[in-house]
Amino acid sequence: MDGTINLLLEKYSHSRRDSLIPILQEIQEEVGYLSEEAIVKVGNHLNIPTSKIYGLATFYNQFRFEPKGKYHIQVCHGTACHLFGAIRIIDIIERKLKVKAGQTTRNGKFSLEIVPCIGACAQAPVISVNGEYHSNLTEDHLGQVLIDLNGE
Ligand code: FES
Image (spheres, protein in one colour):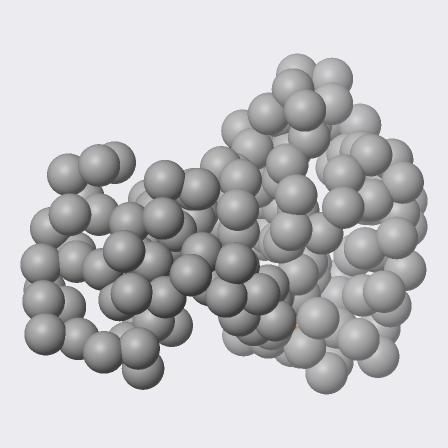
């Protein structure tokens, strides 16, 4: 991970503070999340205090600060999925798996992320587990998906 971040920062060798978000996005894309170490490095590179970086990254709501779980669940919260019950789906997953959006369970098995439209609106509501879509999701279907994931 260290090498990846260093390489990435080299690309932004003449960068200024307005490069912060693109740098964080690239790190997340490459490494999967923003570690404390990554944030410190970026802070040193751009001369921005880490507390400011955390504040900004948290505000943008698109960054993860923990590695993804073995099962990474993405719940679509685009307009169609919202209308078809995305909030209820998020609530059920949070309760049943004891994980909050943006977090990973302690045992590293599940992580939950809320994402904008994932392009399957005709089949709303939709979730994705490690990239596999579950669409037209009912509460029963969701319950079964969670049982299957928990039981393996
Ligand atoms: S709004 Fe959920 S797939 Fe488009």
